[in-house]
Image 1 (cartoon, helix red, strand yellow):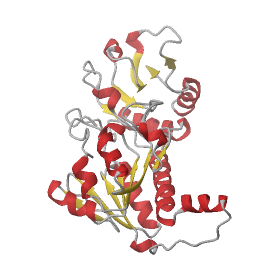
Image 2 (cartoon, helix red, strand yellow):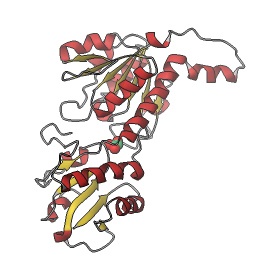
Image 3 (cartoon, helix red, strand yellow):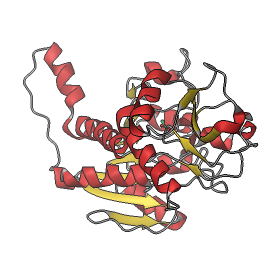
Image 4 (cartoon, protein in one colour):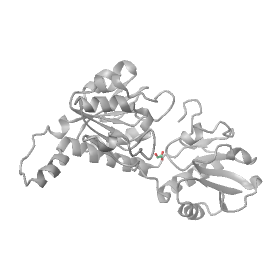
Length: 309
Ligand code: GLV
C-alpha cells in the first residue's frame, strides 16, 4: 500500500514530507531514490513522469497530478486505465488571479508610465476610465478562468467571459460558442487567456483573434504558450493594434534567448510563475481526494482522456 512520488522538476523532499504528514497510513517512495516493488504501489503522484513508467505497477488504483496542467498525461500513450485525477488547488487559482490583477491594474492605471515618468521627475496624472468601465474579458471559463473572472469582478472591473460551452457566473457576462467570439473580443480593453492546451486550442489565439480585439487593448496569457500564435501576436503588437502583452507561458520554455518577446518594448515576460504549486496546499487537496477515493466517493477533477485536459 505504497504511494509513489514520481515528480520531475520539483523538490521531492518537501512533497514527500507533506504526504507523510497528511496520509500517514501510506509509506511514500520516491522514484529513482530507493528500490520500489512494483506490486506495492497503489497511488502514483506524478508530474512529468517518464512516459511508460506508470504501466509498471499492476496494483495501481489511481494517478494524481501534482500540477494543474495535463500535458504529461496526454504525452503518455501507455497511461494505465485507472482514474487520473488532476489538481484543482484553490491557492493556485487565487495566486493566478492575483497575477492577472497585477497586470490589469498596470495596464488600466498606467503604472509602467509612472515608473518612466519618475525617471524624469515628471508629475503628471494620466487620464483613465473608471474601474467599472474598464472591460476585462477572460477566454476560457474553466476552474482558473472562473476564479480570475470572479476576482476581477470583485475589484469592480467590468468582466465578461467566453467559453466554447455555456457557462453561468454571477457578476460576469458570459458568452459561448465561436459565433459569439468576435463580438466578445471587440468589447474588451484587456483579454486574458485561460484556455487549456489541447489539439483544439493549439494556436487558437491567432491573427483572426488579435484583429478582432479592440484597438489599443491589452493581452495577458496565463495558460499555455502554444494556445497563442506568436507571429500573429507580434504582428498585432508591432502594428500598434495591441498596446501591450503580459506573457507568463511560452510554446518553448525557457523562452529562447533570441526570441523577440524578450526585447519587445510592449511585452512583459515572466517565467511561468503566475501560479506556483506549493506542497503545503496541493498535498492537502490531493490527500482529501485520496481519502474520498478510498471510501468510494467521487474525486475531482478527473482527467478527460478524449478532451486532453
Ligand atoms: C503549471 O503550469 C501547472 O500546470 O501546474
